[in-house]
Image (cartoon, rainbow over all chains, first blue to last red; front, side, top):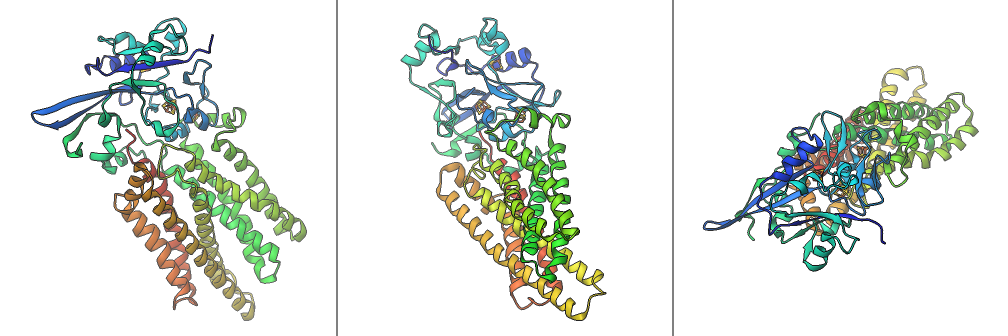
Amino acid sequence: MAKKRYAMLIDMRRCIGCHACTVACKAENAVPLEVNATWLKIIEKGIYPNTRRYFLPRMCNNCTDAICARNCPTQATYKRDDGIVVVDQHRCIGCKYCIASCPYDVRFINPLKNIVQKCYFCVHRVDSGLVPACVESCPTRAMIFGDKNDSKSEIAQMLATNATEVLKQEMETDPQVFYIAADETVMSNVEKKINYRAESSLIKLRL
Amino acid sequence: MENSDVNVIYSVQHQLPLVMYIGQYFFFTGLSAGSFVISVIATLLGRREFKPIGKITAILAPILLIIAPLNLIADLEQPLRFWHLFVFYNWTSPITYGSFLLTAYPIMGIIYAIMVYTDRQKAAKILGIIGIPLAISVHGYTGFILALAKARALWNTAAMPTIFLVSAMVSGIGLVVIIAAARWKWFDKKATPEDRKKDKKLILQLAQFMAYIIMLDLFLIVSDILVLLTAHSDAYQAGMLILTGNFAPLFLGVEIFLGSIVPMVLVLGPTRYSLRAIVIASILVNIGVYAMRFVMVIGGQSIPLS
Ligand code: SF4
Ligand code: SF4
Ligand code: SF4
C-alpha cells in the first residue's frame, strides 16, 4: 500500500459560512485571541440586486513541498511521513523565518507561548483515529479529511471525481487543502487588489 | 470582475514576522563586511600611508559583527533557545549557513586584527585573503535570507544578494571615510604636513571609490525594479509599492535621492576636495543604506498575502 498522505477537501457548494470550524479549532487547540489557525475569508461581490457572498475557509495547506520546513533553521517545522507539517513546540526558537516564507499567511506567533504555531491537521486527533476538530464540527459536511492515497477513502474518491483547485498553485508548494467550486475572487489576493493599504500592516509592527 | 464590485467582509492578517531588528542586523553585518574588505585591500597593497586605515577597519569589522547578531537574538521569540541553531541545524535553510558563518567570521576577524596590530604583515595578508570570501558570505547570505523566502515578491529575486553586498560595500566605505576623516581632523596632529596631505588624499580617493560603487548599486536597483514591474502581479505590486506607494518617500526620497544621488554629486562634483562635503556624503550614504534595509525588510512584508 502506498504511503499515507493526509489531505483536506472543502466543498464550497456546501459551505454556509457558519464559522463553526473557526470556533472548533480555537477550542480544540487553545488558539489565543488575535491569531487564527483557521478562519473564514468572506467577500461580497456584485452590485445590488445581483450580489452574493463567497466564503473560503483558510488554513495551513500542509504542503508537500513546504517552504516553511525547508527554511526552518532548527528543523522545528518538519514534515511527518504522512505528509502533515508540524511545529515542534520545544524546538522552535521563534525566528519567524517560516512565517516570512509561507505564501499563505497561515502561521502566527502564539502570544502566550512565544513560539510559532499553525494548523497541523489536528495530529493528536488524527493519530488516535479521529478526524480534525473543524471537520467534526462542520454542520453541512463541507470538509472532508482523510488519506488521499487510500483509494477507498471518501477523500480519494471525491478528489478523483470532482474538479478541484488549490490556493496559489504558482508558488509550487503543492498544497494539500483542496477546494471544490471556490470562487476565483475569494481565492485571489483580494486584499492586495482592492483594499490595499500598507498602513494597516505598519500598525501591526511591534518596534 | 471589476474590483470596485468586491468588498472584503472578513479576513485575517497575521502580524509582520520580521521587524526592524532584522533590518538593523543586515545594516551592521553590511558595515562590518564593507570595512573588512577595505582593511584587507589596505593590508594587501601594503603601502605605508594605508596603514592607519587598515588598522581602524581591522578593529571595526569584528566589533560591528559582534553587535550585529545581538539584534538577531533580541528578535527571537525564545532568545534562550538560540543554541538550537547549532545543534538542530538544517542545511536547506539560509539561517543555518548564517549561524556558522556568524561564528567563524568574527573569530577570524579578531585574529586578523591582532596580526595587523602586531605588524605581522605576512600572516595578516594570508588571513585577509582567507577572510574576504568569508566576509562576502557573511553578508551575502543575508541577501539569501530574503531571496529564498519565496512568499514575498520584493525579496524573491536573484539580484537580492548582490544588491545587499554592493550596498554593504557602500555603507562600509562610508563609515571608514567618516572615521578616517575624524582621525585626520583631531588625532593626526603629530604627523608631518606632508603625511597629512597624503592622508587627506587617501580619504578623498576612498570617497571616490565609494561613489563608483554607488553607481553600481543604482544600476542593480534599477534593473531589479524594471524586472519586478514586468513580472507577475505580486512582483508588479511590490515594484509599485516602492515607486508610488507608501514606501516611495523612503525609497525614492531617502534611499535613492539623499542616499545615492546627493552623495555622488558631493563626492564627484565641484566639492570633491572638501573633506566636510565628503563626510556629509558618507553620513548620507549610511542613512540611505539604513533606509534601504527598512524598505526591503518592512516593505517586502507589507503586501497582504491573502
Ligand atoms: S501553507 Fe505555509 S505553513 Fe502550511 S505547509 Fe504550506 S508553506 Fe508551510
Ligand atoms: S520560528 Fe520556529 S518553526 Fe519557524 S522557522 Fe523559526 S524555528 Fe522554525
Ligand atoms: S485541522 Fe485542527 S488545527 Fe487545523 S484548522 Fe482544523 S481544527 Fe484547526
